[in-house]
Image 1 (cartoon, rainbow, N blue to C red):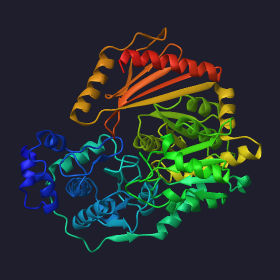
Image 2 (spheres, rainbow, N blue to C red):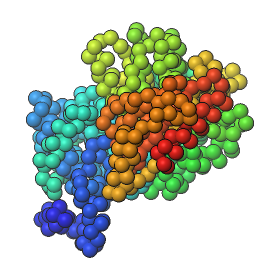
Image 3 (cartoon, rainbow, N blue to C red):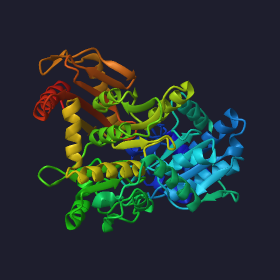
Image 4 (cartoon, rainbow, N blue to C red):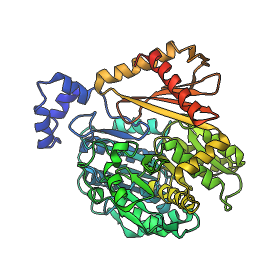
Length: 538
């Protein structure tokens, strides 16, 4: 209530926000939801529902975060002000406004501010930081969250997002900043445009390998009302794929995502319109990017001729194997994945003599692993991915990149088609060689303060009362790569993991198995999941 009253009576508060707060003055639960904490940096930076309050995305939380980042840059670097900060934004409500607020704060703090003149995807922001030699960057996006969300991703000079302990240091500076600061327009902001598109596309081309003739591959693409259509047709055409149809009803940016329940390519329902379009043109593959075009979803025809969504793990291992099979690999190549992704990746890496590293969930950790390898000078990163549809080929970007991944998966699909095969056939070849791997993930949404308490309770219960056996198989002691991650390996090398989401009010459960046949893998996955869910009482 103290925070609420401070906001309500602050002289810098605009009248629309004051009216919004007055509308909830007699609703203590709503006030508590909006003011019980400040938005915090999770696996994807700041992210929250738009609205008035410290636990909401609005111009004041954006300004405060930006002022904290600006003060940190001025305190901790000698040349950061001159090197500058680059800012981009996606198609969501208020994204342009929030991006301008960031640019104004930076410029008014004496830091060179680069702002994209139009919306641009997340991977291009990561690239621009490195290309321009900036000290930091900010992307305004809520990725694949529902329309009422927006977010703020903070990046450092290598193009990767802030990680521990730097993120906590920045938060310390954010907490010192005035909660309701003003941000007068700055006149010296440097605008970025087509020149950055050309530079980024040139690097994408270098990382996708040899151009193909397309082998007649027919591709249907949907940007899910996001920013992806600005670049994807150019990326695919450069890689040799010109038979590309963009889903008409989802081609243009729209912050309300009117044709979708959830703009997430992990959700098969997000492909409904694309499947209709694919049937009309008899497409070989369907690809979809989320609103900021960092995630990529892929559908291909299965053995029954129906379009089926590949899991993030399936797409990841196909790309990993393709890259490691290349004849133009650097010396000492390295692959990176995460603790909740398939174990098949490590087997593929070892078979090709490549280094393999496993990180926590979130591409900021994959970027940090690249940084470590660069400092050691021993391993050259070539590919990284996580099961939640995030892929990164090459090191010119240090975050998920839906464009490069799309070009590569289309190359794999084209090569498969040339042999009268599909992506599922290519995947089956990997399983025959390395064993049939099966994974599943389950997310439980628990919003609000009550939901957070329930999530914490579920984690405590599993931590304090882990199962001794599941489906008759002994369960080892938990591996805790982070305080909020519990990872268990069973006696037969199957595994499960539970963690809270860093960006959404969810708790996530992952299970993975390997077997000699597809049927055995599925049966094992079913029995383990049934036993685990029973233990967790969900």
